[in-house]
Length: 361
Image 1 (tube, helix red, strand yellow):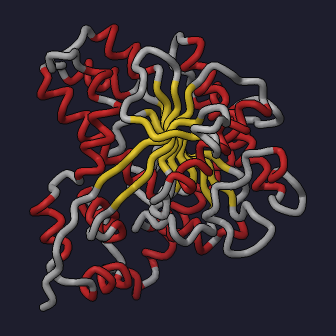
Image 2 (tube, one colour):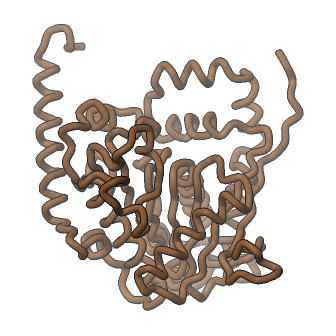
């Protein structure tokens, strides 16, 4: 067996700033994020491994807010350095932790990799270093003081409410792990379980095409996706059903079997673009780029991001999912009714299949 030198993971942050001689591309690297002012952090896909690629997410959010008259929120974006670890193996392992049965092809992938790699990853980084570093910068100062002691519940909830996360693809994997690390840390600091859940629900996360478990997610999370997105496999009957019946999936909201996900059959006009997060800006909301269903999903996602940003700026009670996505032609109750109808039809379909002798166990 080939032995490799193990290089640990790492992460960095860039901040969106006005263009200058020091910041030619309107971004600079930073080591900290303010805890008492409104901020949003973008967690991109696994190829977000440079300042330029991280800045593409920050630039998109910057333009989105400016197009819609939202100002007063700091915009940050994450850069990944996976070292010699395998990000796909990392995701497969998370789905296993979430109790999912991994399909044959991904199991074969894991088996055909250096057989020692996953074992090495678990031994060297039980919690990946890049997760710990991002947690220490983004979340730990919001739940503990400079002496490492817990804050009052009111202060912790206030600090957490000032930060919002936007995640795409592997970014959802990062956020999922941050949520579990924060949960463990809150308990270790001495918060009781009721307060832990109250703090966690004060952090709003908007996800697009999340390649991460949509169950056992500790934050207040809303996801947006395409049924034809083959990368967003949840390793269960529901995601398989959506994919196989994508032509019949109208824009819908589901709160089971996952929590808070908006789905339509196809979002983009061109094929092979269903995992792409682009579609939020005015220049992308065209008949040549988005389907009519895609316009609905991206409009709801746009509303959610804008309203989440406004909440960080203005404070107050955490908005409901309905209040986050509604407006500009989005009828939440209709999307919810669509989801309920599809879910009931799916359950009926599964029941009928199980009546067929060859499908019985």
